[in-house]
Image (cartoon, rainbow, N blue to C red):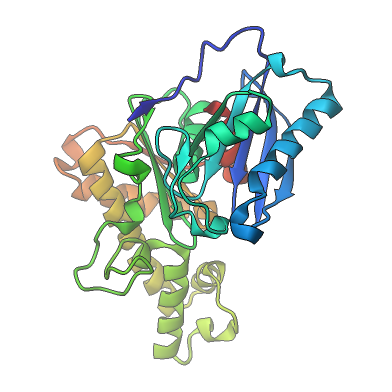
Length: 323
């Protein structure tokens, strides 16, 4: 684990940049060191030539904003960068970040710092960084330990224990989506079968909805030519029994994985992010009930607060700035 310094910055340094780097675009934010977002914008991610120009483009985006705002380097605490893959020691991004065009074992912290004329740069896994953002400025403010679970194309996660990101050996920690839920279950993109994300992701909900539609020809689910997760909720709202059964089972899949995290980590708070988290209490209530009934010690043990993450798409740049 590595400690993330959030407070106690040099009073002379008033600003920080947070960057959330994705395979298509990079979101960039200019912040005060107290956490106020002053401006945000996007930069295209150039994955050509094995992503050789990505850092150059990010440096140019930061320098252009500094020039535009009249900010000298001695006013900038640093630049935080969240990347879609493991990170070693806040600096080295291993080869597994394939969606960045083939990056491999690059000391991103040093390279980007040099491009920025020596401004300090720290790097973190994007899901871990998003969790840090929620502790700094989001739902989990004031907590020392929290787990963030993102229900999207897969199931992402970020773990904060005693104010520290749990990055693990090789920076590959904090991947709850690839814990086992069903032995010899559905195939996962990681190569295993039965991973939690195969049952609890938004992608999984869509698959489950399509399977229910095929099994129930009269279901409203068949009215959606390109079924989405939202469509499953809409069909259930309209009284469709097949859609309602899908959601009831889906809630159990999500809650079962969260129960394992609670048993292992016993965090103060569990945050749920991703598009499905917009369902709010409709999603959260059954999850809380399941966790309370099934976690080790049951309802007699202290229960973590389970809430929706609130920072949305800004969690990545806020957490990166918090670095």
